[in-house]
Length: 132
Ligand SMILES: [Zn+2]
Picture (cartoon, rainbow, N blue to C red):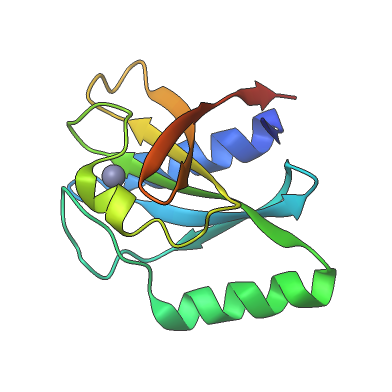
């Protein structure tokens, strides 16, 4: 389970919608499976079907989390056309077994599909997202 406040989810949606032609991505910082902070990251792949976070931005976010005594509770990214389900590359690059992977499908721009997954050692498990 990952709990996220409405305004934080709005922030995430606003971010990924602003990335018109490529996947938007970011870090969800928090504690005890509860999102307390959203970090928007740049997608250095600049691609419509994959993402890789800017290492410098990621390092700055991790430093901030460390100072605030927070963890990476989630990692979000958008699928511009595809379904809200991890791609083979998402599974391959799932470096954070303790994070909830939040995928936002913008295939239907009016109704973004938001789903959470736990990806451990190549296994995908659905994770509930609780809106607070
Ligand atoms: Zn993906």
